Length: 438
Image (tube, rainbow, N blue to C red; front, top):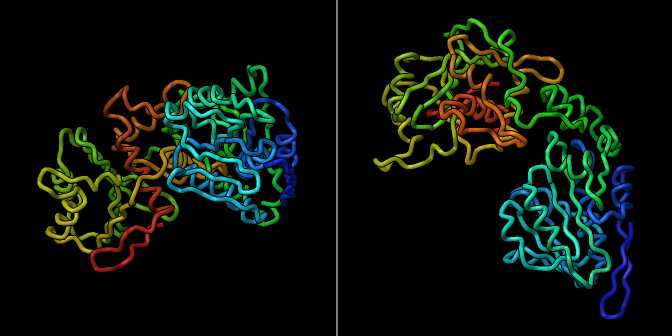
């Protein structure tokens, strides 16, 4: 792939090492003013986005463009990381101003602004020659329209707005780029299993995802299908007939207790592992309760001694109470004082992304391979209501927490536990011992 840029009357040609996949090549060839790359996991969306950005910095030498993502962590981890890798591997000289979060290509004088587009009112002002947005389906339509309005550099050789995304239902992106395509728009829909480079390195990549994801999420994320998910139930994989059972606590196994630090109600779930399957054996729901009251109720139901106890929860439990003590410190002091042994704390520094946590729960309920990894006791009535009633807001992937204030807390607590067991290292127990859970 090559690019040409002119600065100070001199034309510079830069050859870039890049062997695009068929869908990537179609995306780069598109002459549409606004173009998109829609693809599943592993289809090379970030590579396509950043190579297109590099090409446009040369076509529009000396002009300004913008690379964005919904949030700063997504911008840093996916977009900037990929772009810097491309520039470094091709020995393209640049300067990165971390304070202003801008990049200047030294052989063309082109500037790239790095911006999170969630605060789209801050995007107004500067004229742009081009812009690119990663994960567009997690971006508000208003942010895209603001960027469209900034695409007005009269000295640009080619004005272009482009984006990459994974399908996320029949949202505004689907309507604007695919179903009811606006004039001047074009979308390239990448096919699943197209990335030969990935399959050469990890031949079982897609099969492993089939076992990790629930069926609908697998179809969306891995096959790249557009499904009607927005406004639907969040925990789509849950079925009473398959997931509700008469479960009893096994005294020979350790307990896992997960809390959502809500005040009204204070909610938590108690879980045990039976092999690879998680059993939710109890729930504790107390209206207008304190953290101490939740601990006392846990002790009433599960007094010491236990075969081991791991405590999970919302990262916001680090908040300070009016007594000057955090929720987690209250819990630590309580279980130390009450004589519980072999207690470990699986406390994350921050909560996982909501979407990832939700889909992990769905995958445990039922994977794309048809495996059920989660059962719920019939006495966990509020958790069952969560599974059956928690929904997305219409035409979004935002969980509706306003409809019923009693909902989401127990499923959130369970999600924190499952996520931390699957991904987190956690802290060791009171005696410095690890507790094997999964």
